[in-house]
Length: 163
Image (cartoon, rainbow, N blue to C red; front, side, top):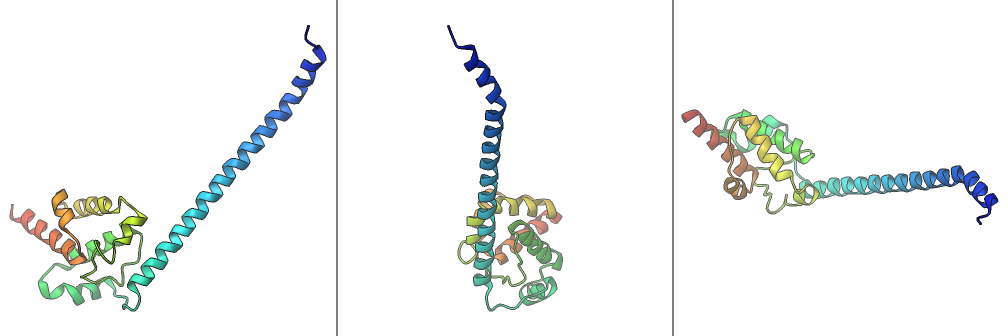
């Protein structure tokens, strides 16, 4: 026959054991949250450092200056240039004031994909929404430089207005 005093002792300790388990779970969750926050902070620092190294030595240009320096001569509408640059800043989460027209997302700017593997999709979706255009997968894959993106949007807008 079981000893009734053991059952009573177990019942008395049950709230203590539950509290101890809850405290353990809380500390585990807090540790995981702290680790995730530390990793996010490290990634943000690494991204800032990479951006700074890539754009080092370049002058900072306001949107209008960027347009005048690289696209005014080609007859590209200022709204296209500033709109594309604005989308790049927003979707990549980076200051694009030192961007140049020849910056290449398959070369010197490819690090952006390491920080956000879906950024290219986000950029295409944002371009389509802002400008009311459709960009095929093939067109997106062939677009490498900032100038390519702007030329693609301009050509789509021209085709859109001609239709």
